Amino acid sequence: MASGEALEPREQEEAIAFLSEPAHYPGRAETVVRIDTHAAVIFLAGERAYKMKRQVRFSFLDFTTLQQREQAIRAELALNRSNAPDIYLDVAALRRQPDGHLAFDGSGPVVEWLLVMRRFDETQTLDRVSEREGLSSALLDALSDAALVHHRDAPVLAAPFGGAEAVERLIEENDLDLAAWPDLFPPEATAALRSETQAVLETLRPLLDSRRSEGRVRRCHGDMHLGNIVLWQGRPLLFDCIEFSEEIASIDVFYDLAFLIMDLVHRGLAAEANQVLNRYLLFADDYEGLAALPLFLSLRAAVRAKVSAPAAAAQADPAAARHLRDEAGVYFAQARDYLAPAQACLVAVGGLSGTGKSTLAGRLVPSLGPAPGAVWLRSDSLRKVLLGKAPQARLGSEGYTREVTERVYGELRSRAERSLLAGRSVLVDAVHGQPAERDALEALAAMLGVPFRGLWLDASLGARRERVTARRGDASDADAAVVSQQESYDLGDIGWARLDAGQPLDRLEEQAREAL
Image 1 (cartoon, rainbow, N blue to C red):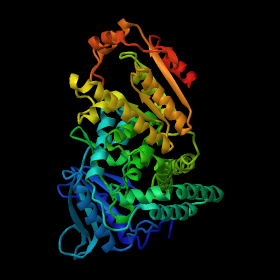
Image 2 (image 1 turned 60 degrees about the horizontal axis):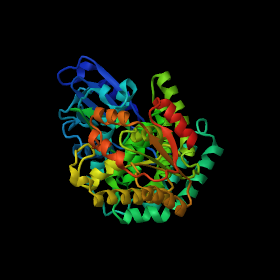
Image 3 (image 1 turned 90 degrees about the vertical axis):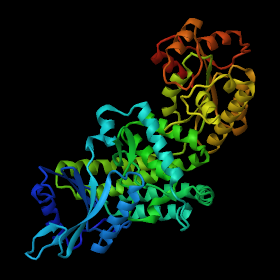
Image 4 (image 1 turned 180 degrees about the vertical axis):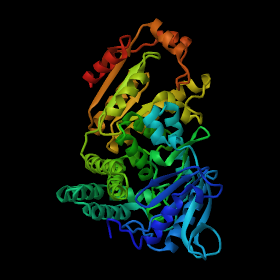
């Protein structure tokens, strides 16, 4: 039953009717808000949320029996408590009373099991926050850090999950599930997606299997999109992880992250997706995994397409059903788009401190190459991380010795090479004041056979001093004294495209794109 089918729904309908009435809850809720998904119904009542599993079966889950639903509810409580102990509270039973009516707990036979959660402000899930006010740079950094910490703490399981074999099974399941909705996903397009995905998998088999052997397949969240992350006490908090399948949740950490990246791109937040990815890479140092990113993004979009179809069918509101059907079509198209071949390139942005290199780089990287854009290697941030500091920490003179700087530029080139070999475009953002530093990047591009373009930003001494003095909370430590000291640099011949950084930023960006 690939498309999902309700099984013996009478008692579930009765339970839903019972849970829809405010007077039936402990303490008597004033109102009840119902949320439907493809596999659950959630009731928001007073200070609590009650989650009931639907009596359905899909290729990827089976909630056919009451025992299976109880096991899933208890697993969901246990697994999510590690991330959100303040939210996941208890398991409750809905029981049949001697008079035939339903009630919470009591001594009668259990009709349905419920997960009890502390109700949080549903307007603070990040999908709502992004729609209402956008996602700030600080919040995006915190979001990326939360994903990274979750992956670092996630256990490596002994079971043989992950790797190329698991991806192949997922491709087959996606194909089966998508084919069950031919009115949404044309059969010829579904067949093409399977063929394209399988072809990409064949090139990645050794990488996927080696990542499993290296411990990069872990017991992850498994459902890491904006709707499953909430602002809790000012920080992004992961909730509602996959509980019904150890196999689905025991995945490559990059596949887990890919859901978040895909969700941001799907919402039109490509720059935000790029920031999350680059922040993650800065600390995880996992550039080889980028080779699998297009495949992982495609698989995530395909999964989202196939679950949106039955979710649409479960909606009581026709408008909500139409919206989900439209979303399913968009996800399906994106699943194919992610697999389109792309040529990697190497771009460098150089210039003395205060010329606005990072400001320009931040505008360029999201659209360099396919979504979510290029790898952004910024010397100021990398210097801090290599020295064990936070990117916004201030360094003294010991952080700017010749030896440290040579190490930073060497690491920039190393990470650039690893990213390019993984098929991803790269933008290197650093002063590049020495001709040898510029030559080394051009030589790297030539060695790898990828296009190279260097951009050099020029600005007056006064403008550069003014800019560095006005900086707040930035990774760069350059101040007015550093700017003045750089006036003595012997820059040598600069063969890169030279741009006037004193002009309006929009015009500077336009000229940079023309040069690229």
